[in-house]
Image 1 (spheres, helix red, strand yellow):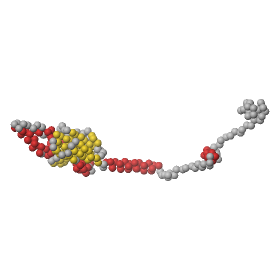
Image 2 (cartoon, helix red, strand yellow; image 1 turned 60 degrees about the vertical axis):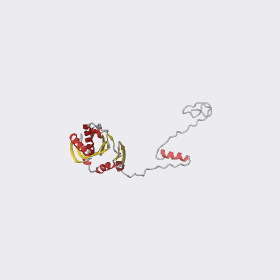
Image 3 (tube, one colour; image 1 turned 90 degrees about the vertical axis):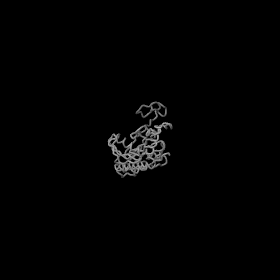
Length: 260
């Protein structure tokens, strides 16, 4: 400590400055107490009063304070699930029109392109499939000359045998929808496991079969001949969901519009 009068150093415990004789004033120790009457909050309040009398009030949470946390969790999970179901319900019923090679079709918006050539029975111009968790739509486009080779070359007028073959091919073209439906029925009965024919007509083929996972599938297939192309359309679902998806099958086939 230093004397405030002369600046000489004063030892601890001295009451008089040995240099100038001035009396040393020792300040009493100050202790801070955080007892009941002098809490940190009260200290803050007293300090606040020095700056304009600011009053700090404790805020207590009252909203949902009486609700059971477990019940709140259950309600929250239920609301999230309900929102998910609503979004899925709306999205599942949304439709989109797809413009493809030579035709357009309206499909559920949830369907995406997949790699599946299960129903391609010979070389085709194009084969594509679209699927979601419930059904699959496939189209295969064949050139008429691939199915009826007699039409591939138009012979000279002096080649009688070739001319006869060519006109036989023309005759086959007139009944191609019916004949090709019969050929598909024979091909699928040989290639698919547990093939079961449901209905067959000119340009229409309905059947059941089991895939590699032994799931029984139901297929509705339509055949249309337009110009030099043969279109083979099919919609597939598990046989157990056939009745539920019957309306969707019908909507897809009604939406088909071929370029003619």
